[in-house]
Length: 269
Image (cartoon, rainbow, N blue to C red; front, side, top):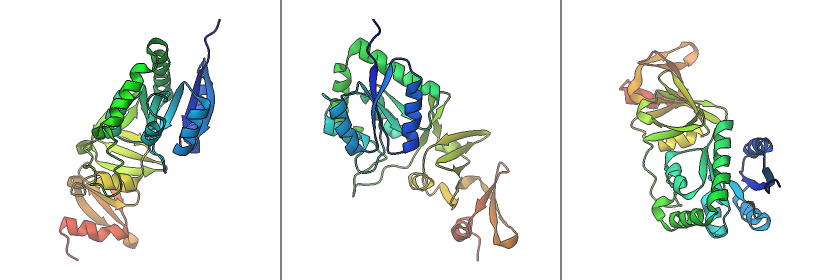
């Protein structure tokens, strides 16, 4: 007799992200979509009502985060969990011990399939007892809370030293010291590291806040540069400005950011 299908709940506040996981699940033999949820409140309701075997749980949701969903459900009732996060290495460290697996957006098909296969194997071989014990340990340890989501009034997290990126189904950690500049690309940010390019799903505003301002500057709404790579400020026709980096790349500078950059460069008005 064929094995019972593995019932999956998909939780993400982004419709396109939910649709992508739904589409990937439709091609996995033995997987059955039990339902979806668009926020943490719905996630709690659906987990309790549908009792899925596996939940793909977005971490960074407004209102109630993925971690708060786990706390409310409780480790004893929580399905096998695959955390989904747009960002960053702080969260990954905690989720790696607390979850069956984690996915860093944007992830490819192979990485998804590997996470689902790992979850199904853990369910078959070990059941949920050990996973729930790990979840409970993480929830009871304040140090395990994701560093990118401080509580209101708390001190800001330390500036980023590394950024996790998805690459050929694996997570690669990129030191910020190696980043030349960052360009906004729709809902993504493109890290330029020498000749390499890495896409992460993160807002420029968030990156600007998390990068050390003594080392990185947002010189345009769509550009962040590493300050020690700036070589020349070019004044163009029509009042446009660009900075030339030591590697020869040219990056646009907005008029609103020009004065701040000139002060940093020591250029007198």
